[in-house]
Amino acid sequence: MRSPGRSGRGRIRVEGRDKRDPRRAGGVVLPAGFEPAALRLGGECSILLSYGSQNAEYRRQRVAQVQKFCKGRQKDPGRASTLTRHNPGATPQSIDYPISEPVLTSYSPFSLDAPPVRLFLLAAGLVLASCECSDSAITEPPSDPTPAPAYNRGFYLDMALDSAGNPWLAYQDRDHTALFVAQGSGDPIAFSHQSVDGKGEVQGGLLVGNFDAGYYASIALDSGDIPHVAHWDKDDGRLRYGTDSGEGWMLETVDTGSVGQFTSIGIRQGAPVIAYYDYGAGSLKVAHKSEGQWSTETVDAGDGSTSSATGKYADLLVGANGTIHVAYYDEVLGELRVASGTPGNWSISTWYSSESGKAGAWPNLSEHGGSLYASFQDLGANALMFGRWTGSQLDATVVHSGEFIGADSATAWIGDSPTIMYHDGVNNDAILAVNTGSGWTHSTHMGDGAHGFHNSLETGPTGQLNWAGFNHSTTDIEFQRFSPQ
Image 1: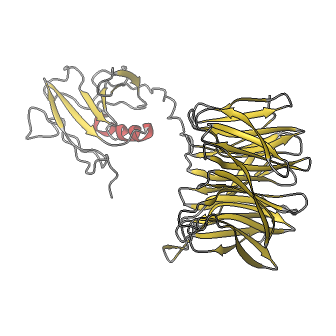
Image 2: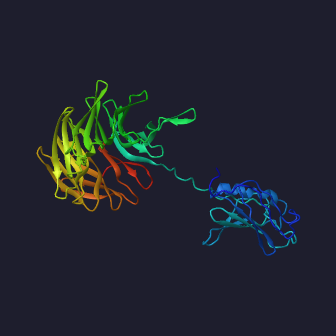
Image 3: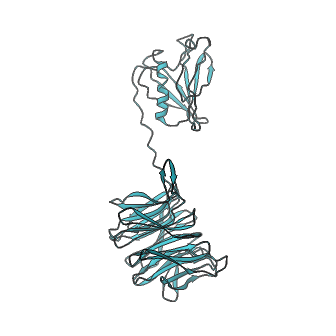
């Protein structure tokens, strides 16, 4: 199929006063890429050439094709060729054009002393070229800048650090609607990316095995730095899992039947455990692997009604003592809940509720000094909250208040100071809040665009913060290693 905006056939005839003899009239035939349209301007001949490219190299190639016609028809040797670019509605600008041999685009068939003719080129607007000939070469201007690579990756981003402090990322590549994993190394950090699940492969000229994957990606590394990932297959409503011990990715379906949203994976006793949302039943589920087999169970069924919606925004943490903690949002009751225990043995507590009935979304659990902490959004109060679980209640305080503040919160610790990265939904900024013991201070960490989506924040072995997030302006991953001011 022909590209939009690009002409097809390549024959152009220049009209003069004597149409019986195209050569005498200044006729010329050019190859494909042009669309003819002859104009008559006074006693001069004019040519309208239209083509669809805005690339300078493409334009140079097209103008070079005129050289064969022009060569030998010099009117005024020694004068340089000049192109005047004219976009409709804009002021024409003259620019030197790279023509390294004598060129005359056309001529008047009856008077060689007539003013030089004009060549009209159309490329994303009209380019008006006045051509006079010269035997001297003209210095070629700088080529068009190489455009920055464009990506469509980083959706549903999650990060984990290996034992050396190198970041690993799991995310959705939207161009392939597949789960990808990126491994970072070096200083500065550079990432190598690979497709893991959902992309499929070409067999016999057909793409097979592909599906809409990579949603709610989650990654964890075991003690041997082996990656484990979980994500949701949107096409089939499946919870998918993968791991790579060095011999390629081993992929499995863990659960089926309208399940797998809001996945969060951790490692307990060397085996993966996954919290996720059953959107068919509106409940929180947990899957764990033991002796090579997966087992799944419903941990919190909510009120059991068809309107139940408990288990969204699940965030799983395996404590230092091996206890599993899952923070999640009960959308019907509008409260933050936490399920704690081990497979088959769970206790559920309401950690926070408010009069607004909209508290507990985007929770993030952390453990420090033997205590559990949680950051979360109180949408009703327009605030990001943070607090320590005392065993019976959450001592939550306001970190930052403001409209649509606090989504995608991620917490890391520098010494005894909690640090939180989160999203400002009004200004689309990534905000960093730090508490050094005298209260919370917050500042815009990344602005001028749409930042702070899918935040992950981890403290590395050197004490620096590692932040990964999704830049919605560039639809790409952003990563930084830094020390807060």
